[in-house]
Image 1 (tube, rainbow over the protein chains, first blue to last red):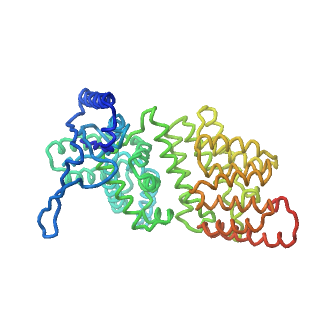
Image 2 (cartoon, rainbow over the protein chains, first blue to last red):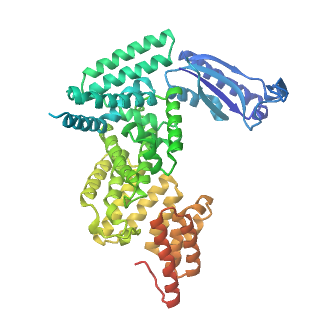
Image 3 (cartoon, chains in turn brown, green):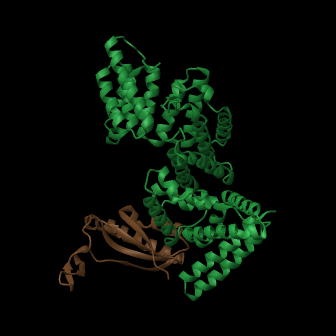
Length: 116
Length: 429
């Protein structure tokens, strides 16, 4: 089954880190990605630009699509990236999610992908 | 044989098979399809077919295999309707062959433990785990479970459906976890069984059939876990704990249905066979040298049982167990009971001081046992006005009518003590 691991964190935390700490953080994500690839479960992953770049589109009052500056939900933690993995079951997905560096500074939401 | 007799016999056999192997059949099929709701539907249709077929053609030699055959076809058909891709069709053929082979090998493998682990998976809402186990392993319907858990059958039904959908769609596996993960995951299973027992326990007089049955069903589940998971200390601990509680069933309410506290129970009404079994199960658990919460709780019950039966004053021993339990769980509920044990040893005032400190925890403000314990110790300390207020709050928070009446009686006695001006050191003795 495929699962999407969605990485949520307070993105202002990143800018507060020193250069060395940022490099260390990047290295942790690269090692994690490499481990997923080695295990043959990696299907895709991306880091997203900061929330300041987000734009939302929704149904406006006149029934036409309305474009708005800003993210869908204003919360303390923002979606900052994702991993798409293919594993046999939820336990395997949770086990990978628990190793994700994001768990150290945020939250990882695990969602199964529709498969039919 | 008359057709009527044959039909009765078929019904009796089907019911017997249902009781004995319903959970086994659900577990075996669902472990392969992960579709618990689909499997339940297929099985209920299979049982209906059995009731139609067996009176005419006689009971089959292997009724479990017969039911599995019918349920397998219905399960695979249902999956075929839902899955249309080529690869899925191939998977279904493999699954079908595997199930067919299992029908001939009797008895079918027992995967009820794996089913329980799926139901009590950390990804499943904690509040629905016990109901889910009761439904899938024992076949109780949402109406019975809802009434036991004080939730409307419709709401309970919805929560169960949602949980089964999550098991299917999120790919929650039907496996007994690996050794390193087992203790934490087993805790969730044991917690769920304990919760089911506790719900049944709130109706000790057994006036509500659904809830009385729940204590029996939970005992069955606790026993089942100890049989399927050999030499697990905590599983044995839970079984011992439930047996101790069960042994006092007849003594915990008076003939009038009033609540009788432990210290005032007639020990002659206790079930000595249940106590003996509890003792021996707890001994087997402690031989495994792997202590845990349920074993400590059972040890506590054992100590209470001995004290009440023999009159031997053993509060220091009780306090030791509470200390260990508190260190393990940090539970404010344990802390309350620990304060009561301290009061037995060092006097009400010392116990009260501990309770007052605990009162800073906001969670306890709405917790009946906290206020009842406070009221009890205040009255022992002759602080009758404060005790009356504490009883008032405890009464307002209680949901069990018998306990409410008991607290009201205690509260009204305060007046007499206060008027007589007697310095009762221990009015409850």
